[in-house]
Image 1: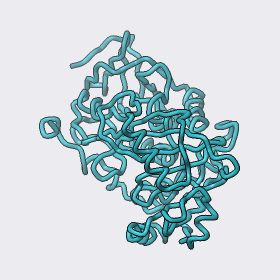
Image 2: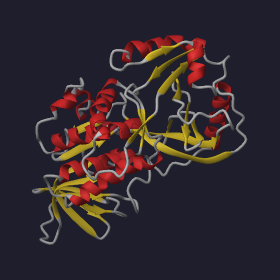
Image 3: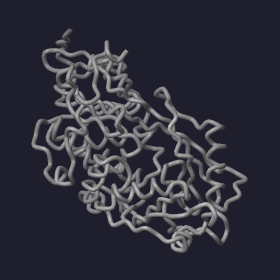
Image 4: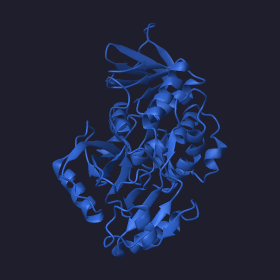
Length: 387
């Protein structure tokens, strides 16, 4: 079906979703193309982006994620002029802890990432010095990664949105996509009260990415949104170290991080969910408190704040970045899981180059990234097979 109305706004790219993935790739594309960015909510970043634990951890995630994280570090340390008003990173070491029965998991972690990052195995007295809130009887061993940082997520997201607007990009909010129709010029994208035209559509819709794929007839990638819960609780007087490391169970059953004089805690839950405005479940809150109190010498009486967000994964937990096999001009940028913030700078540059059919940045490939690990072909299935 085609629509030939002359009044229809025409772009080179339309990016669906203005969270960190969409905002960053739109900003990169807008430097040399006409780009529209479409967001279904009243403002960008209301879902996963605005609910991130905000950690830059080069040892966190599958190999493709770690490569993209390393390739993003240069941007974080030296963003473009006027991109941010304050540093995007502030030092925060990461400590992976293990009980006696988890030592094999710790050893496997060291074997996998030890050649990529300068990690250090800690003696028991060292780990207690680094994280004095731990119960001595709970933890047996730990690995310290000094290369981690806290990320100013809002600064990063707003920086990309400013870059996008400065390059002439057009942002539409309160604009859920109701139709995606291919035509002779590319794609017609229907939003309330308007429809837009572009040669290429970039699907950066987060938890809703498979729904957008189905709307376009592009198949599905088996995306599973998973709910994660987080709480803010008081730190114990006189015993909290603001510079203490992010402390993570080696099997990722919980984590704890100092946060503005308080403690951010999570049960690291991954409960499958439909795409939605995720809210914390009382059972997950109770599980979180139980796990944290078992591992840390804390008596949690009151929760100051609680929230939940969706982290969306495909089967192998690596992102999906590339053109659909089933719909010409439809580009997937989805499945970043819990790693979307820390990998955003490199993944945006990579996706923009692929979507514009330019050479892939060599510095990203030099980190050992294989494009096959991101290719939609590994997971995308026709709609009739995906049902």
